[in-house]
Length: 271
Image 1 (tube, rainbow, N blue to C red):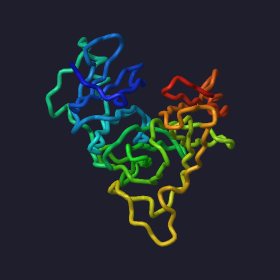
Image 2 (image 1 turned 180 degrees about the horizontal axis):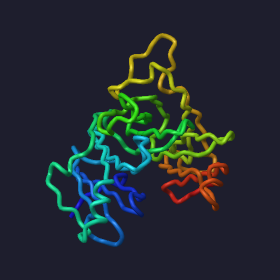
Image 3 (image 1 turned 120 degrees about the vertical axis):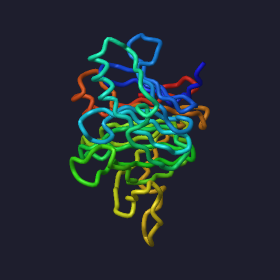
């Protein structure tokens, strides 16, 4: 019987809709349709705490990202697996251990809790946003040495670090007043914060660790706009989850409406 972390799964489109699950033993499973057996299996380092699917490398196709508690970032390109499956009568993959290894690995700060792949600064490129158990959020961007390089030759570059007042339970993006994306993070007690993406040169650090502060530079707690709504709930420490870009219509309409929802673990929800 497998043990799964509550955050280490997601539903997304690799071909159609797949369920991607990571377990405490470092295994990544991709389930397809109603099949009880994994469609694809991959091996990672350490206990997986977060998985996501998206165009994190800005290549025009989806990648699978798995991050472990120890800080190991794993990048998988399942495009080849999808193509081979479509040409094969078998629904399951039989590969050697070497074929199951990730396309790329990198060590980032440990104790990851939640991740998000999205364009958070409105430049048309996706970033990787990571929430941590120590109330910290970091934003990374995939950078390559030259344009058009192979995917495995790039690396994650740290853009910014934010320090929140409360625990981070979820990350989301919602269109702001001017239509540009705003990065939102949930805060205890039905609160949330908007994280401003004011990238500076000293924030960028290819190793994934923070650059040393310079005189007059902003600390990690800056660029955080906190919104509290605790007047409507009794438990100000209750965990809160949020989801942004809510719309009844098309994707184009959702990019303009700016609706988001907050839900607390004691059963209350607000839009």
